Image 1 (cartoon, rainbow, N blue to C red):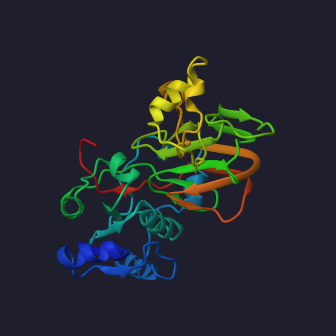
Image 2: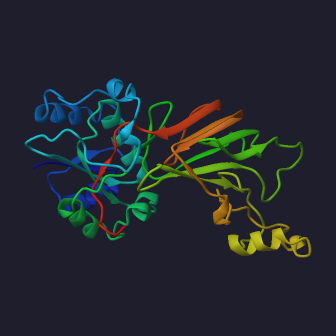
Length: 307
């Protein structure tokens, strides 16, 4: 097996200096040029891809790839395993590079540093040395790969919000079901309201789970801190809403009712001043529309059996 370990950022490089001295030192958010060597190694291992192209797969009437995620059709004699050490954003950038080059047959391991949605979804250890050992030794268990219409892969999560932290004006659709339809009123935005949506990739079909955001991506500062669940409970009752005055607004809180979560293959939105954020990296400018959907290739994720 060919093995590439990517140490993304100073903390990752310190960890790898002790546990993986052959790791490639990279910035915390590696650029396309930083990751060019991935293409070179993939082409060395698989100079010619004998399987149907993305265009040929998309033209099939039955689209069988949209069911349960499966192993990559490419089976090179020498497998390639890429282990990303760093934040979810680093994994997103590596997956984006591999996806655009159509090298998603490579096996992907991940060692999360800091708070990580991927670690929770994949069931990864939080202790870095343990996660590194798992990324070396565990088997591949494919999962859907979710991407944006701009060609960016979602590793852990994405959000749709209003660029200036006001309530959302627009519509968010999951497959053919409406998650949000709202026009923001004038005046100060409420403590809890209609602020967009948070999306996370699933481990199985259909691919995406989406939940309404009931606070903005970055909440307003207040005079006192109150636990989000307590604050929401007080806000939800007219008799106790006055107790929320002066409280700090939580960041990116989702609707706690599980019935509000919708699952599907695609999420589409149209509206005013939309901010698209993928694994903590915001698009530079507001958009009028955006789409997330399941990619035609599945992600060959190295993760525990019972995640």
